[in-house]
Amino acid sequence: MKTTETPAPLPAESGAGVSKVDVPPTGRPAVRRREGNVLNVFSHGILVIWAIMVVLPLVWAVMTSFKDDSSIFGSPWSLPDSLHFDNWARAWTDANMSDYFLNTVLVVGGSLIGTLVLGSMAAYVLARFDFPGNRFVYYLFVGGMSFPIMLALVPLFYVVNNMGLLNTIHGLILVYIAYSLPFTVFFLTAFFRTLPTSVAEAAFVDGASHARTFFQIMLPMAKPGLISVGIFNFLGQWNQYMLPTVLNTDPDKKVLTQGLVQLAASQGYKGDWSGLFAGLVMAMLPVLAAYIVFQRQVVQGLTAGALK
Amino acid sequence: MQHGKYRFIVGFLALPLGLYALFVVWPFIQSIYYSFTDWTGLSPEFEMVGFDNYKRMLDDDIFWKSLEHSLLFALVLPVVTISLALFLAFMINVGGRRRRGGPVISGVRGSSFYKIVYFFPQVLSIAIVALLFAFAYNPDSGAINSLLRGIGLDGVQPLWLGDPSLALWCVMAVLVWSTVGFFVVLFSAGMASIPAELYEAALLDGAGRFTTFFRVTLPLLWDTVQSGWVYMGILALGAESFAVVQIMTTGPGGPDYSTTVMVLYVYQKAFRDGQAAYATTIGVALLVVTLAFAAIVMRLGRRERLEY
Image (cartoon, rainbow over the protein chains, first blue to last red):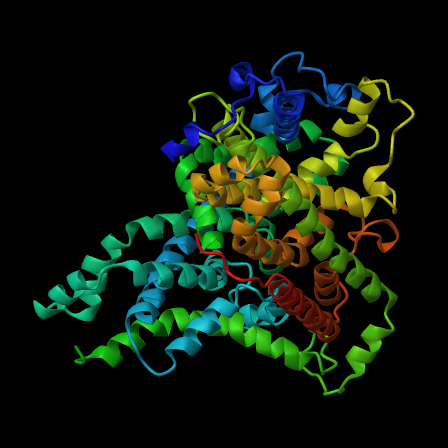
């Protein structure tokens, strides 16, 4: 693209070099340039405004979590007069935030591992083996991405209930895994297809079984894909609200999102808004902190599926 | 290679497929069947009633309201969110001031900062976001009205979620707020893969920014925009709209059913009113709307694929 340098009519300098004083050619670039500056200010302004709109509610929440109730209602935008850490302590112990955290960690931990193991097993078979029904199974999984989950939840409630899994942590884990499989299988099938076949074939010739080839050769090779889809599922499962709302109504088993919603309803009677905000911020901060640390991987994991 | 191949395939597929069939596929099939019965969900007995539930649905005013709101969500939210995201992404990636000797197109200063900040809401649970905004909208002590008071607009103090004509838009604004960042990052990744020569050629031909956007960026990004559109529509019809409407609006469903959506109505009929069969009927309608939406977007958006 070097050739472009010579003919390009650069606005300011080339105007001086032109002997014939011709108004339009020199005038127009100048106008465009000013227009460009206006556009720059305008575009940057909008970017700044949107950034403020994103950050302001979050900052407001953090500020509010350190205030006492009277100043929350009296002056919502003032800085806290002193840092009321007791709000946080109250939310953590009295409002059961510690239990909600523990439940969430258990559910997400179990289902994340299960999703990755089962999802990669299914995806590997679907990506690498020809067998009758392969396409059918693949589309059965992938079709699950576009169906409204609520339709299935009505009978699912009774399926789970009949199996004695309602309001249990392991029941919730199994359901989370099942509903995470469509995207996981879709993503990992595409990923396994991109991996070279020669390594696995060599292992197979050397006498490794199919299962051993998968666990010792293919899984380590698929690590980048597993990380992406793992982050995607982690955030989806950590933030899940609809599934636990329907299938997990025992107050002792509540996960973070439901717990906070219930807290909001009950604090309305108790009037402990500062405690509630402390709970909200407590739930927000770990995810935001993890995002800032693993920013690149998170963005890759969340956008990878949509770009395919 | 053949030895033990089928045993391996069955062994690897059995668990994921079994779990998926039991918790996802089977409930879907059941719920279509239940929509032709008078099952309450409270007792195991039920009888076939033909199309009675569907007839009832067509006479149900609340159903029509929920359908109207769901359609509004599916049409307005993707348009607003994707337009805003395209605009912001274009500004971030192409809106930079042209510097002499620098690359032909460049992002604005701090482009990576904007991308990080804009993505914040995406990592938070929609339930937490909904709770946060429910307080921000509070007419007396919420952040928004006190901000309005703070800048001297004492007369402008809407009831927000309490006003039947405003509530639905308030809820939609929250969904826009929480999803724009995801699409900004998604479109930025797409824009980064457009070769710079195309922009150079457009600039040489004297194209301004608007022309460049509509003639170069948008056509080359079209596939991503389209799949983002479908993705956003499915979210707006399903889980996301359930969370925001259920958590934020009174009832839930808003004053005078002004915010009720199909997915919430399914939930209420099944788990509040003990009308499981009728709930699945509305669920089937939701399924039809979702699939029709996806089909229409894919069809309208079909274009010749541009290779670059």
